[in-house]
Every structure is written in structure tokens, then in C-alpha cells.
Length: 491
Image (cartoon, rainbow, N blue to C red; front, side):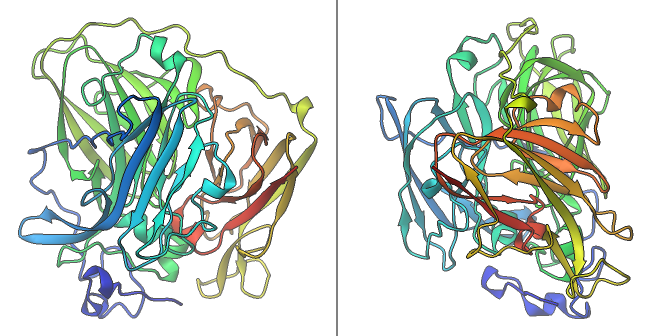
């Protein structure tokens, strides 16, 4: 069993005293889940990162990775990590076809990386474990944006450090626009009626520091928090004009799975999934997002009375319900009609696939057998293997189309959810346990939740770029424990 005290982040070894190395929610030393004096702070909207190319012909940026501090609780400063700020990072907005350049300056004492989650990108600039940014060095990606409008995100992906670094604040949104997003009559004024919503849960030690430790319980179940942050703020309020509002939802948590809805169960319309616009809006009154998944939704507030208050609710699928944010309607806006169509769907047909690969995600004993009782000796594995940076697990011919069939064979005692995230490519979900996926999952995806006992079949084209990329569970504690593999696209 591995324990970490994170003295370097301002946490103390004393905070772990009495736990016997096991850190469980509810143990002494934690700030308990309680009603904080919330809904007094406005929602923070991450600023757009300044494009150094004033002409807009290319996208050129500077990014500093550094330490910071935030007062989440009165009189207690929490040590954090951030991009160009104390916690989280600015929103990067680019256009399809633009040349993208960024200088990523690592001022930390640790290695980090910067992974473009969901981006179709040359392997050398993917930002996974194979592209480390050493302490005190600068990384300079330079490539052309080559995909349709979408809400993506960026975060660190250093080997074994992803969960810790994301937990302390390293994450941000990455937006792509194109001619379709230009012409659609939907809200698009960033920060006014087009709002980023990054949802993350956290737990804290009594001294105000993040309670992020690694032990077998948290590795197996994920680090589940008892406080919820929206854009880095506890229980914020968002003031909007009446009319239609676009919320870009990101489950930016480490391992939590969220069911997101409004307190009045109002219907909203999902217009985009991980990889961009759906074919047409899908009406729903709740949506489930696993860690790393995104969705864009349109919500109609045109019939609200002035100063009406609507609450956004977030249920942890294995934990608590949170009143995450209050929305106050104040002011008028042009009322837009719901678009009937969004983007013609480019479907990938099963007949295009040259082969089917099968992946089993399961918990194994260290001796290689299926799990028995107890937590000791467990290992999270894909096809019986843990991540090895020196091993290529799958080799894929450039230009080919493949079906991947992923089964969650978690032990009966655990009933553990997993997900699969593929770097570089977007995929389409063909089926869940042999059934057609729901409408909101029929668009472009890069991350998909797989429940215990479930088999999900996906299909993707591997095109444009060669090199080595990752596939892994996006529950970050599972990823850091080695539930990850590498695929190489070759010419």
C-alpha cells in the first residue's frame, strides 16, 4: 500500500495521523460536509486566453504552470496549482484550420505535461506521458487545428501524477469554432449567454488543504469529494439575461460520475457531446457525465419572472446530492428559436471496419487471478496488463477504421464503473450491451462510461497522424494506477 502526505503542497503528515494509512471520507481531520455560507459569490468565468497574434490569422499563446493559493474557507488558505492563475486555467479559443502555437512554461518543482483532451493532434504534441515537461523547462507545441467545432479541455497527464495535479487545480477549457458554429443561431457571447461550467468535487483537511492522498481505498473507488466546486467556486450564483442560455458542461472531477439537472426538472436540449454538435437538439431533463465527458446544453429562461432563481443540482452517482449553483434571471435578451438541425452527422458504418479489437477492464489479484475478498493485492488492468511506457499494446494501420469492444468485468464485490478515453481520435458509440445508444450519445465522443457488466462497442477512423497515443480509464486514480495502454498508428 502506498501513502503520500504531500508535504510539498503544504499538507502535513499529522493530518494522516490515526488513519492507519487508510484515508476514508468521514475520518477525523477532514472538513466535514456541511452547509457552508454559500450563494454569496458570483460564478467565476475563466477568461479567454489572449491570442498574441492580434490579426487572428493564427493562435499563439503563453501559459505558465505554477503554484497558487485560494481561500475556500474563511481564514484558511489552500495551496493550489493553476495555469496563469491560482486555480484552473483560462479558456483557450481557436478556429478550425488555424495554426496553433503555445509556450508552456513549467515553474513547478515536479514534472508535468499538458494534454489536449479530445483534440485530433500529431502524436508529438499530444501532451501525454510521452511528452513530459521537466521542472523549469518550456514546451512549445506547434500544429494546425484539424477538426470541427467542439468543447474540449486541457489538463496534465504525467505518469502517476495526473490525479494529484488535476485535483490541485490544473485544468481548463479548449474551444474550437468553425463555419458551422458561426452560422448557427445559438447563444455565443462568451461569459454572457455562452457559459463554461466546470464541475469538480473536493475534500479538505481541517487546515483547509486539499485532502488528496493515495491509498488502496481511493485507488479502487476514486477520490470522491464532499464539497462541490463550479469553476473553482463553492455554491456560486450566475446572473443571466432572460432567454436562451448555452451551458458548456465539463465533468472535470477526478473520478466522480454526475447526474446533472435543474431543481424544477425543466427540460433542456443537448446540442453537443464531447466531439462537437449533434445532428439535432435532444430534449432531456437530466444528463449523466463521467469524469472527462462534456456536453453543451441550451436552457430556455425566456418565461422566467425577473429575479427568478433556478438551482443546478448535481448528484454524485456514488455519493451526495449538491445544490451546485443558483441561476438568477435579470435583464432581457433576444429570444431565439430552438434550431431544428445542427450539423449533418458523418456516420461511420460497421462495414468500414477492418478489424475488431476486444478489451477487458477488470480488477485482478497481484498473482493474476480474479479477485477474492479484501482490498490488498488488487490491480486495475486492461486485458490483464498494467501500463508500461516501454510497451506498445496495439498497432493500427494509418487510414484504417476499427471497432473496439470494451467490457467492464469488475469483480462482483466491487461493482466498479470504468470509462475509456482514446487520445487523438473521436469515435461513435455503436451499442451498449447490444442496444443502440441514446440520442445524446450518438454524436462524436472521446470518452465513454462503462458500467459494471456492460460491453460498449465503439468505432473510429485512425487518420492523418502516425505515432504513439494512449487509451485509458478516465477515472484518474485508475489511470494513475496503470489502467492505461498505448496504441501506435503506423504508415
